[in-house]
Image (cartoon, rainbow, N blue to C red):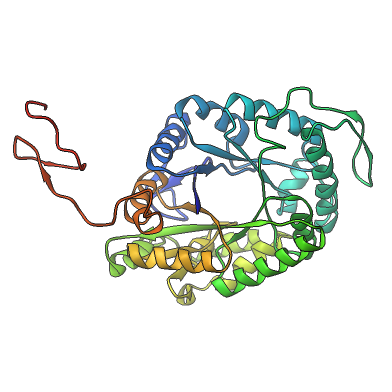
Amino acid sequence: MEILWFIPTHGDGRYLGTAYGGREFDHAYAGQIAVAADRLGYDGVLLPTGRSCEDAWITAASLIPLTRRLRFLVAVRPGLMSPTLAARMAATFDRFSEGRLLINVVAGGDPVELAGDGLFLDHDTRYALTDEFLTIWRRVLSGDEVTFSGDHLRVEGARVLFPTLQKPYPPLYFGGSSPAAMEVAAKHVDVYLTWGEPPAQVEEKVQAVRALARRHGRSVRFGLRVHIVVRETERAAWQAAEKLIQYLDDEVVAEAQKVFARFDSEGQRRMVELHRGRRDQLEIAPNLWAGVGLVRGGAGTAIVGDPQTVATRLLEYAEAGIETFILSGYPHLEEAYRVAELVFPRLRPGRAKSGTVNRLLGPFGEVVANEHPPAVGAQ
C-alpha cells in the first residue's frame, strides 16, 4: 500500500469556506508539512497545480534538501508545456532528488482558467493533445530521438541528453473519468487516480480502465484521492467533520457550486452529483462524507470515523483494486500526524506498532512517548 499526503500550496485552515482560522501558506509551512510527512512514513506528497497555487515544481524542488526519502508528485500540463521541456524538467528533478519524482499528468478542467493560460481546446481535444504529449514525453525519456507529427504537436529530432535516474522514467499518475481520459490512462500511465466516490463506483472505474489497458497490452495500477477525518471515537470524528463547515453559509456554497458548474471535467461533475450542494445528504456511503465538496473543487469527499473504521474503509477500496492512497486533512500539518499515528498501525502492521498505547515511565517519573526509556541520568 502506497500512502501519500498533500501539501496545500493554495493555503490551509481549520474551517472551510471562510478566512476565519485560515493559515497563510509560505515556504516555512511547506517545509513543516514535508518534513513531517517524511518522518512519519508517508511515501510521498502531492502538490496541486493551478493559478490559485504556488508553482508546484519550484515548491517541490525547494523541499528536496529538507527531506530524505519523501517523493514529490508534481504536475505536467499538456497544452501549457512543451513535452520535451517537461521531460528535461523531470530529468533534472529526478536526478537532483535521487529518484524521488512522481509525475501527475493534468489536462485541465476549468475553461476559464485554461483561457487565462492561453489554452482554448475543448475537453476531448485536450485529451487528444495529452495522448500526443505523453507519446513524445515517454519516448524521449526512454532514450529515443523522436520525430513526431500529430494533429496538435510536432517535434523533429527531439532528445533528452541527461536521463532520469528512474527507468525508463518517473511513474506517471493521471486522473480523469471521461471515456477520452480513460483511454489516455490505459495507453500511457502507470497509476490511474480517482477521487473518493463510493467503493462500488470506484470499482467500476478500475474494471473499465483495466480492460482498456489490456487492449493496449498494458497493466495499470490504481489510486484514490480522498480526505480523512479521524478521531479516537466515531462521535468525535463526525463532530470534527461538522466543525469543518460550521462557518460555511449558503451563499458561499452557491457561489462555489456555480464555479464548479462551468468545469468540463467529468470527474468534477461526478463529485457534485454526490451531494448536489445539499447539506442534509452529505454521508453518501458508510463513513464517506461529501461536505468538503460543498466549496472545494476536485477531491470533495472524506472518510470519517475512528481509527479502525477509517482503516476498514480504506481497505475496502484496496479490495476494489486501489493500491495508492493520496490523503489529506485540515489543517494539513496536524492531520498528517493524526492520520499516521492513528491509522497507519492498522494499515501497515509490518511498518508500525499496533494501536495500543505504551505508557513508559522515565527515571524522573515522567511518561515518555516512545518505546525506549531514556538512560538513567538523561534529561
